[in-house]
Length: 266
Length: 295
Image (cartoon, rainbow over all chains, first blue to last red):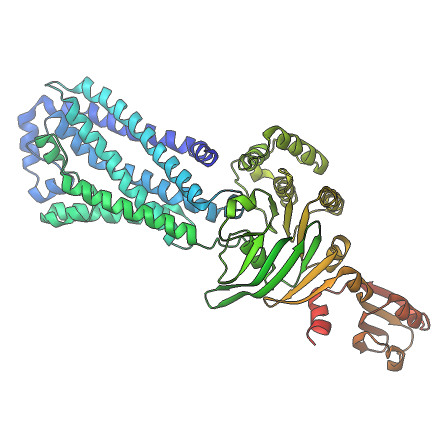
C-alpha cells in the first residue's frame, strides 16, 4: 500500500483543483438554467433558428434542452472533455513520471515486483477518479436540485453523472497503455491533449454529418444522453465495447511494463 | 556459496552491445572492485543484476537465487547506490527515506534509528526538500537510502562522484564498517585508486567483456603511474630502457612516460637525472588499458 498512498499524496493538490474546477463550471452552468427556461418559447425559437447541423455539433437537442436533464446533459459534453483530460493525465503521468524523473532505478531496485508497482499506481489513479466523481456528483446534484422546477428523477441524474466516470475509465486505460508503449514521454500533456481532442473532434464530426458509426470509435459517444433520458439506462453494446477496450489496454500495459528495460538515468 | 555469480551474462540493447559473456564470482564478505572505462558495461552489469534490465543471454544468481525468477526476495537484502541519483523533487529528505524504508520487511524502529545515525554522520539535513539539495547532498541521500536497511549485499555504481573528500572518507569508513559487519560489496568505478584502496579483488571490464580478474595486491605490485619530468638537459633514451616503461616521449627539457612496476626501481633511475620538476600521477584507466591490457 505504500506506493498507493504515496501517489494519492503526490496527486492531492491537482485532484483538489480538478474537483473544484469541474464542479464550479457545472454549478455555474446550472445556475443559468432558470434564465433559459423563463421564456421557453422564445428561447426555443432562437435555438431552432440555428442550423440543425450546428445544433447537433453543440449537442443541443430541442426536445430535451429545456428539461433539467437535457440542460445538464448539454453542459455535460464539456465536463466529459475536461474529465477525459484529467483521467488521461493520470493514466499517462502516474507511470511515466518515474521514467521522466529518472526515479525508476530507485523504485524498482526496492523489493517490490513490477506487477505490484503497476497495480498500486493504477489503483491510486482509479481511486483519485472515484473521489473526483463523488465530489463532482454531489456538488452538481445539489445545484441541479436547487434550480430544478419540475419533477426530479435521481436515477436519471445519476445515470448522466456516472457517464463522466465511464468516459474517464476509457482514458485512464488508454493513458496507462500509451505510457508504457511510448518510449520517452517528456510531457504528459503533449500525449493527453492530442488524444483527447482527436476523440472529441471525431465525435463532433460524427454528430454534424449524422454518422452513427463514429459511436463505435469515440468514448464521447458511447453514452447517448437522449437515449439515457428516454430509457433510463445505458446501451449495453457500448458498455461491452468499452469493457473490452479497458481489459485489453490494462493487460497490455502490465505485460509491457513487466518486460520493459528501465531506461538508464545517465 | 558465492553472493553474486554470473554465467555468460549477456545483454544486447537491440543491436548494440551492452555486455558479453560476463562471468563474475563475488564471494561472501568480499569488497569486489569492478572497473572499466565509461561505456564498458559496468552499469549494464549492475542494472541487469538488479533486474532493471533483462539479460538477453546467460544467467545470474544473487544469494544463490536466479535474478530473473526471484526479484523482490533478493532485493530485500541489497542496498544500491547508482552513479547518478534522482529522487522525487516534491518530497523532503525524511519523506524519501521513510518511503524507501517502507519497502523493507525489517523492523521499522531499527531502520529509523539507522537513518538518524547515517544522516548525522554524513551531515545531511533531513528536513530539506529534495529539490533544494545540491548534487553532493542528493548523493548523501542515496547513501543513506542504500544502507538504511543494513543489507547483506551493497552494490555501488561509481559512488564517489559529487562527494567532497571529507565525506568520501566517511563514506569509505562506513563501507568498511558494513563490510566488517558481514556485508559483501560490489564496487564499480573508473577510478583505479579508490578501487585499490577499498577492494580485495577487481574485475576489469572493457567493451562489454571481462578482460581480467586480479587481486589488488597484484595490481599494486604492478602499480602504473604516469611520470612527467622536467630536465635541465635533454635526457637520453637509454636511461629509460627499464622494464615497465611505456609511451616514452622525450623532448629538449621534458620526459613523459607510463611506468608499471616496482616504484623503487624507477625512482633509483630518476635520481640519477638533473631535474627541475617532477610529477607522478595516477594514469587514467584508458591509458592503462591502452598500454597494458590491450596486448
